[in-house]
Amino acid sequence: MIIEPLTQTKPEIAAGAPMISVVVPVHNEAPNIPPLIAAISAALGSIDHEIVYVDDGSSDHSPAVLAEIAGGLPTLVRVRHKASCGQSAAVITGVKAARGKYIATLDGDGQNDPSDIPAMLDAALTAEAAGANPVLIAGHRISRQDSEAKRWGSKIANAVRGRLLKDGTPDTGCGLKLFRRQAFLELPHFDHIHRFLPALFIRAGGRVVSVPVKHHARAHGASHYGTWDRLKVGMVDLLGVAWLQRRWKLPRIDPNP
Image 1 (tube, helix red, strand yellow):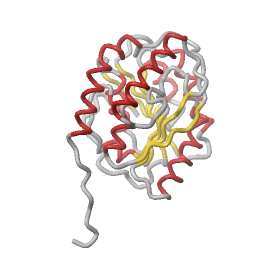
Image 2 (cartoon, helix red, strand yellow; image 1 turned 90 degrees about the vertical axis):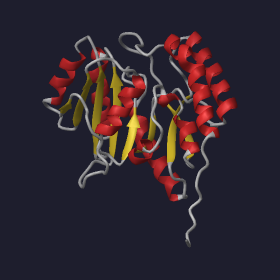
Image 3 (tube, one colour; image 1 turned 135 degrees about the horizontal axis):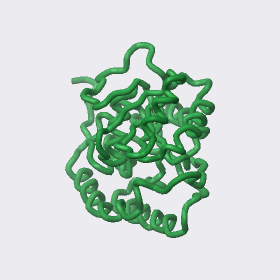
Image 4 (cartoon, one colour; image 1 turned 90 degrees about the horizontal axis):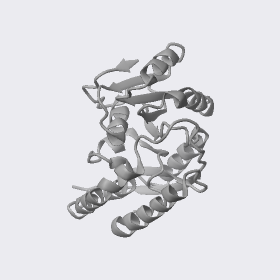
């Protein structure tokens, strides 16, 4: 299925919808698309799922590659932005287009490993059974396969973010996350939201569980949502989320009104 442009949100999950939707934002990642889709399909073969690719205005062969794969893979949903709007916009579009009860997000460069998703889903179910709702399962890249500069930049950013927002999450930049679709739709949406999901879930009265995940070196191409872009907007976004935290009091519902 292809949706261009996406114009409305599904307010409820339809009967017969998959257990989980894997949302993958991409921008000019044509060579990385086939192996990642194959890896997702293999990892979730025993779980009812769909794969939602959001092409964020790619100028390479990404649309053609996705169209060719979709012809033989009914679980693949294609959504395309006519112009690039950024990674967070692509994630939001993908979640709105998804039908699954749960959402797993993956970076489109193949560095996240889809084989971690089943364990993350189990972690979510366990946390919810213990009474934590909404819950965010956040991947923690123990052995990052990135440049030293990128790793140090992330360490500093995570330290500053954690100190100011108190989100208790060691790796908020990991693209591999899992949550209920409805919980995400109830959050405030803004550009770069994907880097602040732990703080936003806590703000909503939820819990964040970090789990160790694998991380691979990029096989093809270069990052299209780069370090410089993150640095330019990081402090403004950080202050904005801190403002959101201060401007909200979580209502406590009286069970006996």
